[in-house]
Image 1: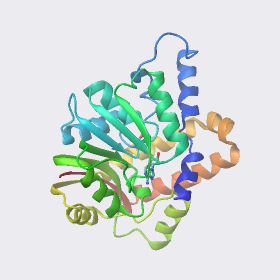
Image 2: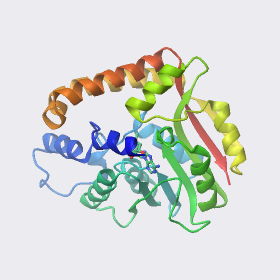
Image 3: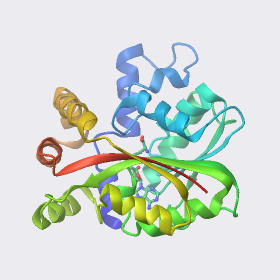
Length: 275
Ligand SMILES: C[S@@+](CC[C@H](N)C(=O)[O-])C[C@H]1O[C@@H](n2cnc3c(N)ncnc32)[C@H](O)[C@@H]1O
């Protein structure tokens, strides 16, 4: 677990980077009230942008008043997007202290505290009573959790009967080698990666039914190539905040990851299931 904390403590996407990008865009932060929309270009740490969040929202049937739990919510970008567009009530759960604090501060900055609350906790041990939520959602995060059965069991426990779990995550293909798996773990805190069928089995074992699985490998290939180019375009800014060594280190690990996606050794999956 310390690996994943360290990875996000030194991640190029951070509260400081979001605020710096916003300042560059607006000149200053004090130029009139900010809304969640002002942050969306910078605060989403998953693949496919707002359209990807919207697709999960549709699969989950998220609407006004839905009690939503965003598992591994990062800086709270998807939580604020859903709260502002769908008027749902969101709990954004995040393990990393810097990210949980950042999520709370950015939410306050855009006046969404009445719709989004941030809880710092581990997704495998949820600090909530049973049947507390209508929908659980997560994006590109379970890859960091070794005990995937535990997080799915916990999601099942906190959902109401008939509630929905919707998420996207990395998935391993048969051609992913042991050495490549080890490197992903060492470099990106990515662990016990599942296949599409592996996830289907885990969801059934956790008690979910009506499982749907979509292969996102083709979609992600183009998206990730663009994200790598975007990271490289922000070189100056990243070096100024994190130093040249960390920029180079992150560049190497991200390029390795994108090569695995392009080679079809690693892919993505979109999953939905009912409690
Ligand atoms: C790639 S980011 C995704 C953030 C967010 N879902 C988004 O789309 O913007 C993955 C996040 O998962 C968090 N995380 C990893 N393991 C976790 C755990 N066991 N419990 C809660 N959060 C966790 C990380 O700290 C990180 O913020």
